[in-house]
Length: 385
Image 1 (cartoon, one colour):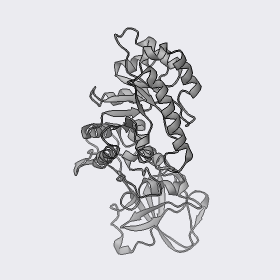
Image 2: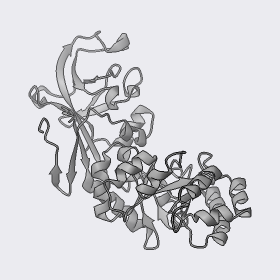
Image 3: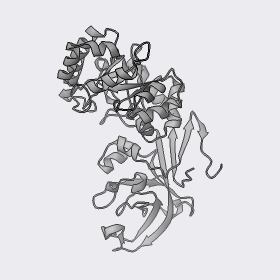
Image 4: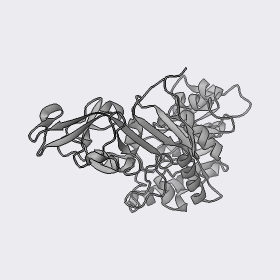
């Protein structure tokens, strides 16, 4: 058991409500799935997935077969679990045993999946992925056409889903969004001539907000469920999910001219009060928020305090000079808020020069995740058997 002095809290109620908001937005002819790969974006699949299932979600996406096996152990068989990163040789039996739907994107994968289920009375469910312009995984247009020209393999495998992925959905005006939609629709029309009952999905978190044309039969948000704004530059339509408070382990008075951290990169221009907190780059506090030009900040007693010096592996230093002495919590009770009421994952991402996805998935294993759900605490008791 992890026994952490930092306070990392995940609001399962907010995750539920975010999923419901997205489901309500897409209308009755489309269903909202949940992408739960990378341990539910670092927030804890064991708590997140059952909460989403209880809310009504029945379609889940993971990256790997191993993630799929772990998720199946948490969910009833009526939950559909897709494995996005394909089917490597030797993993077919796990997909069959744990009722996982592999997302296939090569002829070799289709052939192996067909061979693996030769003993079954009917084809096991799967999906095929088409590259509509992402330039990553998927059948190219020519590869898909080759399959359609010799349809025996597709007819034998009988994929249930036709999938693609948007590259620029978070940039509403980007011309690739419309281009991918047109390419996807054209390919889907061809596939439906062979497999008329196949269903389709294109939209990720930001894709949900491009419009109903992008929704098809299913949308598959990930980051938006966990509090990342799917419409950058606009007010977020989803709730913040994560809060993080780091314990202050030392408060130091340092004279003007003193330096802070590795490389003596930061020199104090005035006499300052500094707070050293437990939490560094090993815990997901990116080095880019500190050092020269760093824009990292936190809050102590409701007052903004900047990161000073380079972020270390285990500690980060904040300048708390602006906090009046009468607002300093007693020793051992002081925490600096890094995520929460005053700034969310997108704000921290801007300071680190990255994206909210990376902030969430970087939250370290040394934090003990504490959960709340609809006002009920699900805290893990530290140090108990």
